[in-house]
Length: 412
Ligand code: ASP
Image 1 (spheres, rainbow, N blue to C red):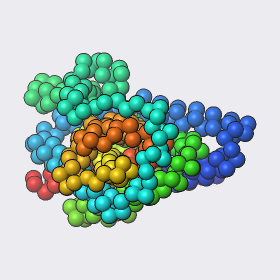
Image 2 (cartoon, rainbow, N blue to C red):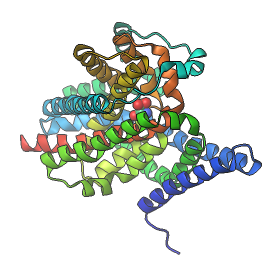
Image 3 (cartoon, helix red, strand yellow):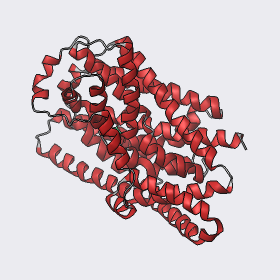
């Protein structure tokens, strides 16, 4: 019997995972059968993420270094990084503007009161994270001994070192061709291993979704239904309308074409809630299905997975206004501008791992004097919303690689 294509298998795995997760919840998490099922899905899901993380660091390191070194051949380096950064900033601004618009329009949280959540907040102590300190911490984390960064899986520090190494290779020119060739080969080998890991994606994704769906706190979800609906609706507008429109206007590629090429990565992002863990698959889809040149993908995607987060930025802005409504404070225009800026910084500073946006959220709340403890209210539903915001984060990176490629080619 011939198996359906990997794409279809992944889609089926995701659907089956959600259905099984819901049935587990119906059956009650205490029954022996469900417990075994959850144990097994926990094991398989974690192993799948372990495999992705195993390959992540060598991949990020080689792809950025080789990407930069190869860009030199086309005299495009400057143009690529400038276009990339402008794209990242502009699309995140669009996402936050959309978030503020819909939060002001729908006013999630206006019928609720913070007193209802006293229990949740009682046992919760928010870590103080004022903006200047956050910024200092962020900068401090950029430059790390590369060996320790590689060994600890510190993605942002590996990205920074790889950027520097890439530039050094370019400067050295012909002298370092052997090093470049070795790195190129290691990159090819890692991509081959990614191909193998992909074969396990349907199973891994199913397992992750079973666990996630089964663990949802339904009562809490019902209380916060309006907030959840506003976040999901706004994320969908950004992911299904805004980003595809940007893609179409600049590259003339249709959303359907994009979805076909990107769906493995998007579904993986949904299931893992981690842009970083998804990166190997994002790279594979972009280069093999969306025809992004490896040197562009190698630069834009790893950088995007660490700093370009449209979904997270959008979420942080909606959540800040939601909490303000809960507390009964109407944020002024200037305060909303502060939310705009801090949401962007918080999203850029959030590493691409599950619930990272939740941690940096504290900073956004504090910037306008909202109680940081209030994020305790959001925690029970965070993993659920993280699925979709991570998908939008990864979509933004992939659209970015296509947009940058197009704009850079045009200018040649
Ligand atoms: N999980 C998100 C990501 O990896 C970050 C976040 O918003 O928590 O892209």
